Length: 294
Image 1 (cartoon, helix red, strand yellow):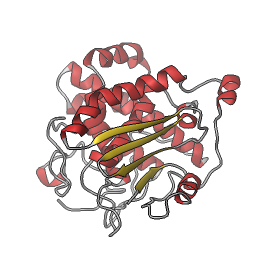
Image 2 (spheres, one colour):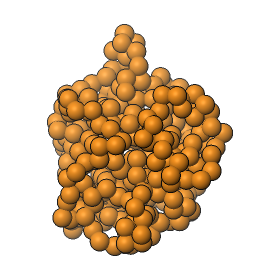
Image 3 (cartoon, helix red, strand yellow):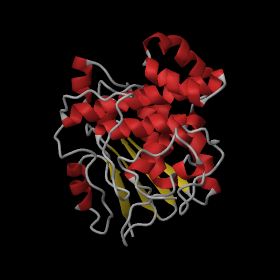
Image 4 (cartoon, rainbow, N blue to C red):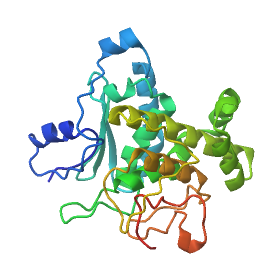
């Protein structure tokens, strides 16, 4: 049976459904929208990634996560749809094939740089490898939910795909413009320069992707690191969190001091993660989407 989990527009989900009637679909990445960014528009307006950058990000993800997925008995397959103008990305599971569908329209959005695009790719990988919480429902058992895929992106994936040398260069190039509150929290959580650099880079990538959410949702309020979402759920919400809540998740994922080698679990939400029950006050899943008690 063909199963799909989308990190994308509801319209794309509906079109895909027409070709595979027995799929598991999540809600749209954002409320239904008709944003398209074809190559010709990027050539006029600029911004976003070029095709070489698009492929370089996905090459790096494949280099790191291909062997990890193979060790688990699976196969990583990335459908590189550069010419597709949809502002979207998605993950699918076909037996032991872990598929990511990466669209050029999203990569060409002016808010996206290589780090932001890598975060998106890591999010899609997180649907396969992010562990609990899983999407609830009798028809799906494989996919980590949206908030957990966001958390996995910074907690595990970005820490593996980015090198210490590149993180150092990122800090040299960007420290003067990084948010002071975000930097201070990274320095409180971590002790070494290498760890702080990585934490700051994760936080900055989260803000990049959050700018895309804000644009597509046509929101007026600017997301900030120091104004976390005050909404609290009584039980875990599987749908895509609100814009500020998603930034909170990326930010917290970079602050969790659990080792990248401390694996997440498909059933135990505490394993490999920072949870309040273990005494953590930073790096925990935000309560604006996470409601389970470990």
